[in-house]
Image (cartoon, rainbow, N blue to C red; front, side, top):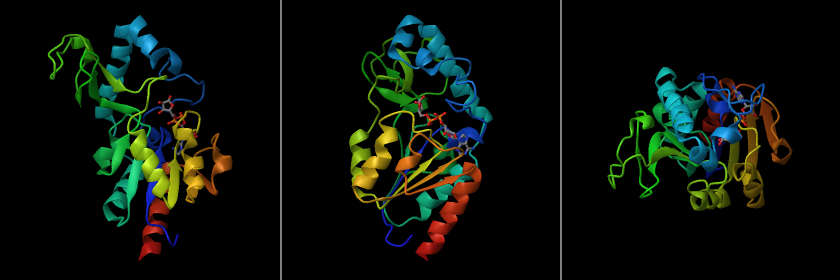
Amino acid sequence: MSGIHNIVILTGAGVSAESGLGTFRGPGGLWEGHRVEDICTPEALARNRDLVLDFYDQRRAALATVKPNAAHEALARLDCEWPGELLIVTQNVDDLHERAGATRLLHMHGELMSSLCEACGARAGYGGSMLDGTLCGSCGAADTLRPDIVFFGEMPYEMDRIDRALSRADLFLSIGTSGAVYPAAGFVRSARHFGAQTLELNLDPSEGSFFFHESRMGAASELVPEWVGELLAARD
Ligand code: APR
């Protein structure tokens, strides 16, 4: 663990699974009864706007019924206590990292609790139903708010910031992701290219396990607090 100063942590749906939020590629491959590709695309939004808005309304509402688990809390503790650079890059659109207290955090696939105006591009905090026809708070347009979710085929957020952090990382940690979706699935190779140590914590082997120096299999709520404890102890 010595020589670690700058850390990048990638999280996926597996870090929120024990909070009760479904993963995308679990048994059956259907996500809340839908094929991900049928609900999470600009074409789906254009083809059946109300279905997509309602789907995300339901997921947004469900956030009120779940809470951060020990993995989110351990990462928030690390964020608070780690003296070097640290960036949590989450693929998740839930707000559990924030609610656990993480601050050095970005959502590369957007956020349920945010709206995006298709007329002016404004992003804003949002907690209600988009089927209500809320006006955009920036441009006043009606019926132009969509979920601020990066759909398949759209560019993830803050890729420049992520690439800079990966180029400076001494350690890249991946938690609870299947390694099925790019560009996130390629981060481990970028980090290795720049000389970082790489560690995967996951319930099952991921599609990218081969690229990690070390993989630990198990539940995030157990592996993450254990790893954070090791890291902070080694620093002292
Ligand atoms: N602890 C640790 N890992 C877990 C747990 C757990 N309790 N439960 C599940 N996992 C692991 C699974 O083994 C799987 O490898 O989490 C991973 C979840 O994989 P996916 O369902 O594919 O989710 P994710 O990798 O986040 O998907 C990436 O795909 O659909 C898009 O934009 C969406 O951000 C998402 C992206």
